[in-house]
Structures are given as structure tokens and as C-alpha cells.
Length: 481
Image 1 (cartoon, rainbow, N blue to C red):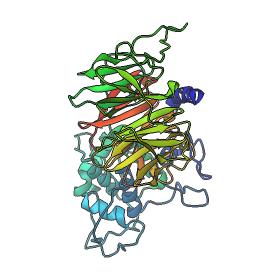
Image 2 (tube, one colour):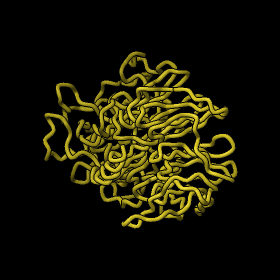
Image 3 (cartoon, helix red, strand yellow):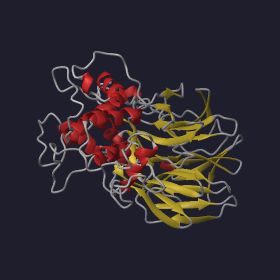
């Protein structure tokens, strides 16, 4: 496992070059086609599927139902309720949920009680859909040569689409509002929207100490506790300033890195080999120390070893409201629960290298690292949340999405599950039965502003805190939509 963890960090660095696949896996999409990158991007992000038999049908016309469906997926495939308001949209139609969502969200309207789902979408309709979806504001600019033929309700959208780089004209300064859109054009429009219109989340550095953070927790007085796998310490962070909470600086190896050790003593005299995760327990904090094969209890007076259960390589920790501590024993493939009285029990077994844990809403969430998936444990039942079991990077429906060695998991108050997709260098989200990417390496974006090897996560105070062990950074992302 130690060698694997090192390879994960290396793989995450290599992931920096993987902005999007260079070509899609469709037989009718040539690698040098102008739309190849866009098709690959939409397949990779789970926004567009093929048409069967390994074909994408790039020249096929896009229907109104297909157009609102890709926007529905881009929105995270939110659940919808109630009957459809359109007479030509059957309740069991494959596009019923997207159409219902588009109507409620104000993205698309019908006419005369009909939606016309099978009609080809026009360019002005497509521009209007994206304009409403983004809450865009039109910018003044050069008028189109055929502006008089653009419907009044679509004029602002057409101007916005041009100014934002979403949709260009068709030549000669014309917009061609009544013209149709092909599937290749829709793919290009989607990629333009994601890369040019949607801004990347703003990242904030939350720690003034250069370290290798892996685990994080919030204290009752508002500070953060952060485990540091490089200096072999636990830091207390207040207003961005770090102060040693537990652990002593040990001797250094030939490369100048502290080697750590194993010493139960006063906090400033104690030694850790590899502090990994931290969670509240009893009158202090439990800290996993995988290289020593133990979990330590840190209080204001001492650091001592918990002996409730024999462990092989403990990593992830979580605590519930009843004072129980959950421990992911990665090499044993087991998750234990240790009660306040020290009695232990097995919560799950036969897992493949479980690591990151999070307790939320009466359930235990786990990043099952070796199986490249995320699971949820509730009342003795194990439920697969997302991941095919194969290493990869694919968004879309939870059952077809893929991760690569995910090591961290956190859950927001709205039920959104955030995943540290470690080897992919990405932060992923699971919501509404779908997976998307909150933040990932993109070609041309500075590495200092991106996740490289994210591990520990914490949702708190409207922010997502990310421990990036390879980038030696603790940063936060504001959580909005």
C-alpha cells in the first residue's frame, strides 16, 4: 500500500496533462475532425451519448428534447416532480424529466400547450436555452447582418451567445436564427459553455505552513486541525495561521525530510510516523497513524495509543453524534466502529482498500479506494453510490461514472457528496444520481491553482476544504450551485 500511495501522487501529476480526451470512442468521429475534441469532451463529461453501434452521428439534427436533456445533465440531472404540463410529452418519455425541469427552471417554454420535443431545435432557440440557463446578460456589440430576422425574444440571447464565445455566426456576419443545429455543433457549444462561460471556482489558501495535508476537522472553537504527512505533525489552524497541535520535529533523512517515529508522550514530545486523518473522539481527537499501524488519541495533556482493536493500516476516520469512532483499516479491508467505552465491532468487511470516511445524516460514507468507487453504509446495509469499479475519469450517471483511486469523501448539508478523486487530480460531486466535476486539472491552468493530489475533504461554513498532499496546500472552494 505504501508504494501504491506514492504511485498515486505520481499519477496525479501526470493527470495535469489530461484536460480532456483528444478523441472520442466513436467510429464516425475522425481524430482530425473540427468537432473531435468537443465530442470527446461531452462523452467524457457524461453530457452526450452515442446513437448506438459505436456511432455519434455528428451530422444528425438536434431535437428540442435532446437540447434540454443535455442542459438538464449539465445542471446535475435534478429530480423533478409533478405531471408534465405539455400535451405532447408522455409521463414515461425518456425526456419527460428534462422537459419538466426546463419548464420549471424557465429554460424552455412550449407553445399552445405543446413542447414539440421531436422538432429540430433552431439556432435562436438553442441560444435562448443557454442564455436562460446561465442567467446571462446581453452585451452590446456588432449587430448581425440578419438581425432583423432574429425573433425579438431571442435577440438578447443571440448577442450574448456571440459576445461570450458560445456560438459564432455562420459567415458573412449572419446568425441564421432559423437554421438547425447538428450534434457536432451542439457538442462544440457545450464545450464552449463549460470552458468559456462557466468560471472556475475561486480557490483560497487556508494555511501559511508548507506541509503535506491529508486530513482535516473543525474544532468547537472554530479552528481547523490538519494532519501533515511531511513534517509528521498535527497543525491547529486559526485564521490561516498554523501552530503545532501535536507531534515533535524528528530527525531528518538524507533528503531533509523528517522521518517521524512512535512515541506516546505529551503533545509536544510525541512522535507520529504518518498522521493521516483526524476526528473527534472521547475528550480529544483521534489521529490515524498508518505507518505505525495504530490510531492515537490526542488531548491537551498527552498523546496515547488506542488499543480497542488490532489494526493493520488505519487511514480514514469519522465520528457520529453518539461518540462512536469509525476506522477504515485499509490493508485489512475492514471498517470498525469503536464506542466511547472502547468496545469495537465490524461495520463492513471484504472491502477493497477503504480509506476516506465521512459520517452524515445517519450514514457512513466511504471512499473505497482500491475499488475506485464510493459507497454508503446505513444500518448494516452497503449501498453503491457511484463508480463502475474500474479506474477511469467519466462523469454522468452514477452507475457508469468512474474514478481513479479516490481517497477522500465529504457530504454537504444538502446531501451532495464530494469526492477527492486523487489519481485524477480532481474534486468530483455526486448529486441527483449523477457525477460531475467541481474542479480538475485543465491544460493551461496553473498547477498552484488546481488540485494535484487531493485527499482529505471537509464541508463547513459554505466552503469545501481540500487537503492536497502533493501540492503541499490546504485550500477552500466556496460552495454555491
